Length: 602
Ligand SMILES: NC(=O)C1=CN([C@@H]2O[C@H](COP(=O)(O)OP(=O)(O)OC[C@H]3O[C@@H](n4cnc5c(N)ncnc54)[C@H](OP(=O)(O)O)[C@@H]3O)[C@@H](O)[C@H]2O)C=CC1
Ligand SMILES: O=C1O[C@H](COP(=O)(O)O)[C@@H](O)[C@H](O)[C@H]1O
Image (cartoon, rainbow, N blue to C red):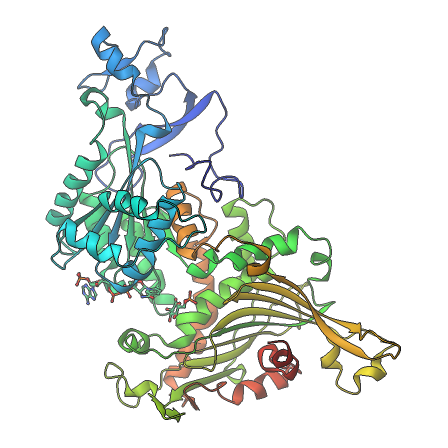
């Protein structure tokens, strides 16, 4: 399938180059190859539009294009002949082009938290914005017993019309829910997946004249919203029993992608028994966030930033993630991973790679991912002395008692799993040599935020030094990219306080999204789901990127675990362990989010 273009769907194709540009006189037609597996069953050739039926490989190899544009009839052996006039009339009304393909989206683990919280609402938002293909169906799949009506009821409770133009929201919801179906089954049962495939087929061909059924291309997307130990079972069953016969089959995989280099590589190997790399969409939802998307635009389309983007002008860069709630309810999952694997090795490192990469040759997925891999592979090995870990402890404030991490019944007593970590990373290349990239991530802190802070060097020979006293940091320019909440990009500059005297002040040049743009910002999952449907891989993690990310963190994670490093305990709702300040101070850095100046502006 090409792009999902709709006049109301601004995020498709227009925002960046897509992978399958089509000329007016040609389109991609799939040619079927014999295979019973997920592995590509078809190759795509660029053929004239009037060959717009699914051709068997033999036909493609030997036939010349039909002399007339008379509709074609596909015989049982896959060869073509012209049709009767009655058939012609029927077929003339049904042109096989973009409208003639379908997409079935199966949410595996539909009864779970992520499906309810993020995936179904994102699919609805895409539907509301006319971003889904005309013929789409959503299937929920899980072991829980549910009818279609019960699934719709469950989904409807999470749907909101978050979009600015909210007209017809309830009608749209009803229409969307009618396209949602449920199938209950085991994750390792090929039989159950065959039943699912049968239901899919019924929907895929629901409105197609019998004669044209072989001409309709049915694409299938599976979203693995299940715990990782089930991934391979699902992929195996979906591959053998529910993959598309004539279109694409893609699988979105949720993190965690293993818990170290070895387990991640083993997962990739197992996935590749059933899928080729291009079918695997490893999601890191931070890459779908609006301001992370904007990072490259900021850098590469503004003359004022890119020339400053190096060790020459940048003193340090900070990637900060904090949540003001603990792991309540997810302790069982979290304890096996900890904050370094949960946030740093993926979300923060991905932002770092995008921030620090060289200019890609184009905006094509492979060009961008090549540059990200290069940065990741240029990083110096992480050092234990550059890592601070913490864990939250219980705390009572204003009569309210907040639990310790280990109060969670699903967390083993005495667990040393970090809920906070701060580290300093270095990139061993000409652009970034010696610049500390600091990361800090924590749960149960005083605030919820995710941001990138770029602290520039002091102005050499600054004429106004006297006005800042000895604390030159107070005069440092700082660029803040606030990913969430309340998205903003602001630059701290020094200026004169108006009046007859000469007093200096620090102010923000502020692009505050809520003030600048009326439209609500789409959820990251919307962008990523749309990209997966369109086959756009730019925001998904390639296997070599994943390998590089794990190579960086695995030795340190092992060292922390083998040495049983005791985390620094910090009270629930606090600013985290003081060790993080000592770490920053070692590199002559102050965390931007807790400096006095920041409070002044908050
Ligand atoms: N929730 C979140 O915010 C985030 C989740 N993720 C990842 O997304 C995926 C799904 O997350 P989430 O929805 O929270 O997961 P859940 O724990 O809610 O599991 C999803 C579904 O999988 C089935 N399931 C759960 N445990 C098992 C088990 N041990 N054996 C077999 N089936 C099981 C259940 O369905 P049933 O019993 O009906 O079969 C459940 O409803 C995970 O990989 C998670 O790491 C990633 C980022 C954030
Ligand atoms: O991947 C994860 O992300 C969430 C935070 O995501 P956000 O979009 O709400 O910022 C985090 O809570 C969770 O622990 C982690 O697994």
